[in-house]
Image 1 (cartoon, rainbow, N blue to C red):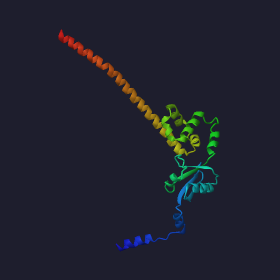
Image 2: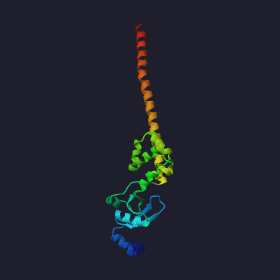
Image 3: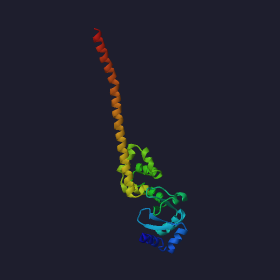
Image 4: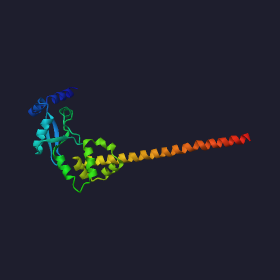
Amino acid sequence: MAKYESAVVKRDILPVTSEEISIKADNKRPFKVWSSDHSIKKSVVVSSLQDLIYSGCEKLKISPPVRVVLEDGTEVDDEEYFSFLPDNTILILSVSNGRDEVDTAITSDSINDPILHLAKILRKDLQNIIHFTDEDLQRLVDADTEQLAQLLDSSKSIVSSIQDGCQRHLDDRAQTKEALELLKLYHEANQHTPHINNTDKKRKFDENDS
């Protein structure tokens, strides 16, 4: 028992570096900042969103204004929301005019207008997928993953997951349509069946009377 207590005491009195003391005193926290194309990845220790933008731009060698987004594309533009992010969260710093440059690039012949329109809708809210037509969903499934990643300003892995989600949504819709068709056929068959049964009953009743 004494050995255990001694070990606990030793662990509690481990020296704390001056840097750790400074970080705790300033309420600073560690984050990972990536460039929009994920080619540069740095770490920063900051106390606020504005501090992260300043330090992140300096380390990534980019100039503000920038957009700060999570890996799933959610934009972080509020200090209160930022304060709830866990330590070591990956934050992507995207130059604000980057989207305008992308919009210019995607008007080329390599990408068709429907995909551009759908990408703009998805950039506002990924949940808009549920409102897309079957044709639109199929367009997203068939789209080139790398080009779609550029349009959405996101990683290929995330875009691939989005395309998988579109395919699942299409499959669910197809199953729902099949189920509705079966119900319709059953309903139509059921409407004719009582008429046949009533005719048989009337015929039997007439035979009994005779």
